[in-house]
Image (cartoon, rainbow, N blue to C red):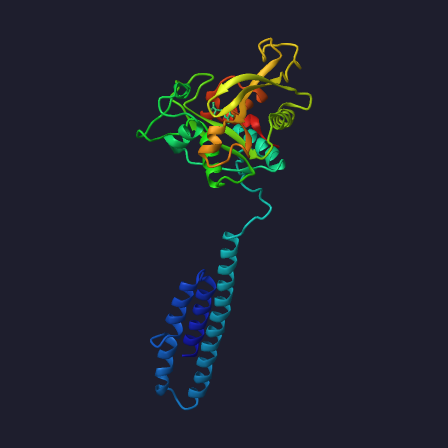
Length: 344
Ligand code: DAH
């Protein structure tokens, strides 16, 4: 019986040494120390032993059980530790690995030009006003001194939605809306950037949708010289310190007198080149003194108040500034085009 026990111990210790995972180890535990295991079996047979042998075998059986027990515990601790290390290794994060590159976009050239112009005018005390792109005929035309049937409506081919509602053809309706909100009290000093729509066939210089920036100042004693000084500051900021401007007489129904504004050519300094088509001047915007009818319709007393207004096209300004030859580039989202305008 003694040999039997010693053999059991040896067998069990070998199996424990071989067990390479916790499940196998547990099987070994059940096989050797479980209720139906061989050691229990040996102990059950003790009754048949002589009284001298009994304590000796009993003690040996306990020793064997303890040896197996402690070998099991030791192995279990080792396997658990290994398992933790394996898990840690598989979940390891290498903080020294370089990050995945994030693709950065950049400002659209039109956004750049619009923001530059906004910054300039905000610096001169203007606020930014906005209005709806789906506009009433009243604000788009009538309140700007363009009654129904007025021939100048044909200057701006419109997308009508109903007889009274259209996609705004210019940002000038924001003038009328803003003045109305002021309820006849000045000063009003705003610029209005935004999208406008015209029923044009798209080509290198026309687009059915483009942007405009409107400017409006209404107060007592506003004069044409104020308009000229303001636009002079604008031309210098956008096209360079040496720029000059000139006014040419023109016609807009909402201003009287009306002017078209030219800036001296930034490319040749006014001597004549292909950018200014040999004239030394480049047309950049329309402007004028707010027509008394427009002031009155918006509730302003035109004897007390005067004002100036201007309207410009950021596409045209960006095309001149960056030498862009086709307005369609702004809307085609070709990355090769857009990536040239990195703000870096
Ligand atoms: N609304 C005009 C257009 O789209 C531009 C314009 C001209 C606006 C003169 C003005 C202005 O405020 O005074 O053609």
